Image (cartoon, rainbow, N blue to C red; front, side):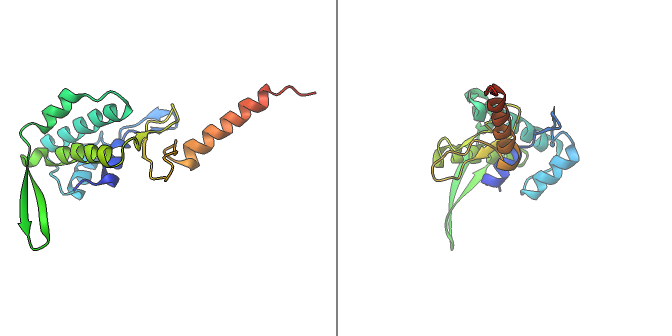
Length: 167
């Protein structure tokens, strides 16, 4: 099942390391383990759909929502209510190879609806990660204060120090 944590893992699977973009999902074996760890299939069709969903959701989170691509991913998907001892549960009717990619898209829409404006790219233009702002004031700007936040604050401080003329 895809929750907020798994959504962030997927979105953040293309970090910049030592100034070079990486794709943690480029290796089929790594993505297969991730898919199986989240209750999905690890076959070729499933992992291809996961990569596509991740790429589309990264684009959508950065700004322009590719509605046609998202509609294609959700085409033919149905939510069916099931009542049991634990109450109402919604079951997805979708081919197994599409399940995890569809859950990823639905988790993204769920976060946008429940936490509007809180899922966003890191404020560091050199970073390709995303954050889910859980702060009360909705003021988080960086994926990590330890890395991007400190780096940008130090850079701004150095720029200000260079601009101040010495007597």
